[in-house]
Length: 312
Image 1: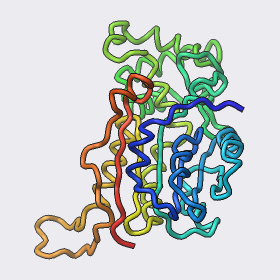
Image 2 (image 1 turned 90 degrees about the horizontal axis):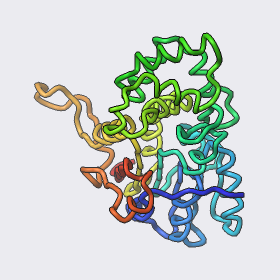
Image 3 (image 1 turned 180 degrees about the horizontal axis):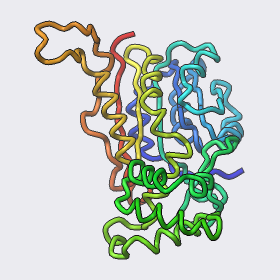
């Protein structure tokens, strides 16, 4: 079983968790187990790791990879359910939580998963292959207005209307079934001079489709809050994002939880009684090193934000 993947900002993210040998940690996005492996290196026999991933292939691969460890538990689920997951396995508080919000190299490089605009495969993009809803359903089922909306909001694509119109007109003749079918349509409507500014012309549309298929942004804020609720005082959460929409949600959620009072400024005294729940460790996100960028170009857009729990 193969699962080729480069863990982004491996040292920076794990170091930021301040691993305790006897601690309990959660890797919310197990993937190929790169981050989990480094967490396990820092634990003793009483320490424990919970690895979560909605991709069954990742779970199966890591069960095999970590077969020699008896202090790791595997959960095939979406980390949006972290509150329920921890309750079901009888854990109330943990010492650290990691979320790597990127698509794994394995998923990108596997044609049939449909995540890549470089490789040709069926339009899929499901993180959880047990769900039925896929990118094919969006491209061939959404009306022009809805397609335009997700390309604009989730992809920040300025040619969203042109692309949506081209898709709707094209599918009247034939279903759009593969990634390269879609790439060809996008190439026909975006001016070629844009390549110099943005690289591959399909990048933003594919990002939008992946977010829509997997409901990535809808669940993120609540998942962060639920995760922090399960941290011990002094425990840390480290989150790696890969585009501005994700990063904005993480930044804004951290800022809200790190604020003591949200009353209007003209109130003479605080009435909301909101407490400061976390301390933000890095005011500005940590970025990949030059060495990492030279080895793994896919890390270029990554940002790491870290916060520490202050109160129960």
